[in-house]
Length: 222
Ligand SMILES: Cc1cc2nc3c(=O)[nH]c(=O)nc-3n(C[C@H](O)[C@H](O)[C@H](O)COP(=O)(O)O)c2cc1C
Image 1: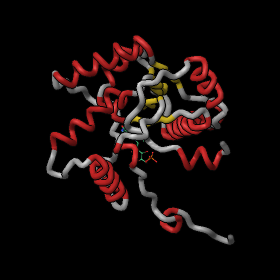
Image 2: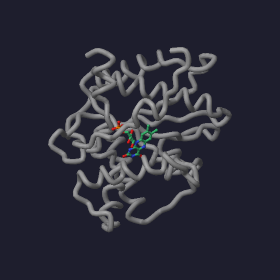
Image 3: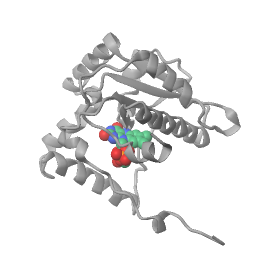
């Protein structure tokens, strides 16, 4: 697989097969992904891989949290409070496309919430990697986290694996900090669910849209 193929075939997978992922392979990919660039070579990413019994334990904790309606104070907002256009529309269209694939109607709030809650079982993925960052870091270093994570997700594709980045975990910073035993100076960014895609699952038919080049790039002297 070349880079273009990895880029084109990476997508957020929201249904995984019950098929284990090799821990040795994961270690190698996490190490390889650290070739990602970072400003000043700060390498501000911290990764926490969870699988096996620990994954079962975390899934059980989350089932309990969700059933009990537990709410925690997020440490950052996933989206701006007043999301302007065209971003608002992009987000809306993604939601509509996702729920259309699943046959969940707009008015079916319970159905939508149930699907969203699947995030907290990692869409049945056998493995996940959480990403945390030192609290002293700002937007430039957070962008470095993105570079690491995209590099990882492309390497996963090369290894025949699929993934879903998940910011939803920012809703449970306390639970996850406790589970991962994060030091106080570190905050959670997101998780990446990792496994083999269930190609039969309707949700995995989704192909998210992209704006045309002219909408996000300009060219001078080219
Ligand atoms: C940092 C980050 C966090 C995300 N968080 C979630 C999430 O919590 N749940 C989810 O289902 N998708 C999540 N996504 C997936 C996006 O919805 C997805 O990347 C976007 O719609 C583009 O689709 P694609 O990844 O299939 O190309 C996240 C993506 C990124 C980059």
